[in-house]
Length: 239
Image 1 (cartoon, rainbow, N blue to C red):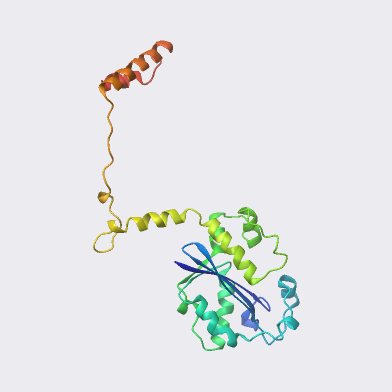
Image 2: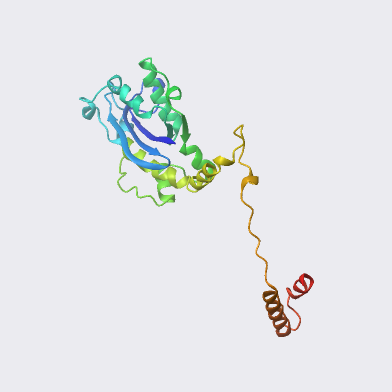
């Protein structure tokens, strides 16, 4: 399975009021392994950045003045995420912003080009109700080093989120592998694996000498415990 861990930075909090995407960071995972491939771009939004947003990510209008517009990078962005399953923290925020950017260019929405979206914020809240679920809090919980994160940054946050996601879903890989190994057990209609195809367990019985030695040991235990050996009656019945 190909997954794209994605994060964005924006000019403000609401695309409905004209805020725009100014940074996109993506890292690729295939079968739960980071491939080393990533996509990262800064974008000129052709508008001012809210002061509160600058305090969060440190990206200024001056820095973005010579950066490409979204229309200049949309094709390469779509190519990177196409057919992948997106992993996003607070997915509604990033998907809303990116869908707006795509709509402004009459391009298909993300759900038309991607295989789905996993929201790690929702996942974290379901796994640990009532506990903090910010990216920093999850890094602390799973002992992931986020010392570099003095400010928000799309690529760094995507890299950290990939580690958080793998930590949150650890153990699922073995379940998936187990199902893959049972492929030959599927019925002709693709139904669930059948337990009947598994080889029978080998039953090993004790020899007469082993049974006699076991009985003698139980008798010694019974004598030492003044008849309180719990296994002796069962052993006698079995004999």
